[in-house]
Amino acid sequence: MKQIKNNASPQDLDVWEEFTKGIKPLPVCEVPPQAPLIIDEINPKIDYGEAYHGAVLENLTIGNFPNVDKRTSNRFRKGEMPLERRLDLHGYTEKEAYEKVLDFIKEAYLSQCRCVLIITGKGLKKDDDELFSEKGILRERVPQWLNTPDLRPLILGMSYALPKDGGEGALYVLLRRKKSLKPFSS
Image (cartoon, rainbow, N blue to C red; front, top):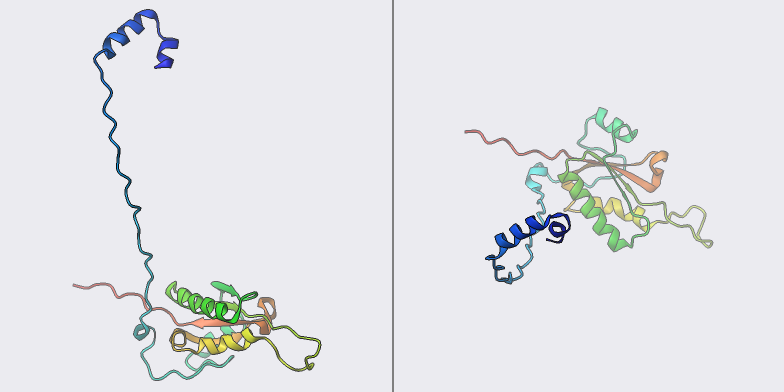
């Protein structure tokens, strides 16, 4: 309205006043606040029967690939498969690291990743340690965790990484292919 007064001629203002004379402002209705829309996060579930339905799975050891063809196992061991995800466990407690590994492997499987890297670190050496003693709780635990019933059906093999990816302080993990849903046929 101010802009109209500044740029309008006196005749325009008279016309405007005559035009708006009978207009009454609408009553102000308070709109009650709406409750926020809460959308539950959709967490896809892993169908372990779909992931693996064969005989009892044997425990995996580093560098051993019981159900993988030779060409794939060689490519995997040599680091020739593209790494689709990485998880660095430096700075995590054992409990936090376990949760991270569990979530990481499940999410990678559901995302249909094939090869992932878990960096455990080599562990710390203390001054009073023997020269040849191996330390590193996460380095020791991650292979055990990968053999738990929640993760083992999703994994085909694991191998120490190449030096460029962390050497013995990291593991390549080869995941099973997630079978996609079969199209509906009529």
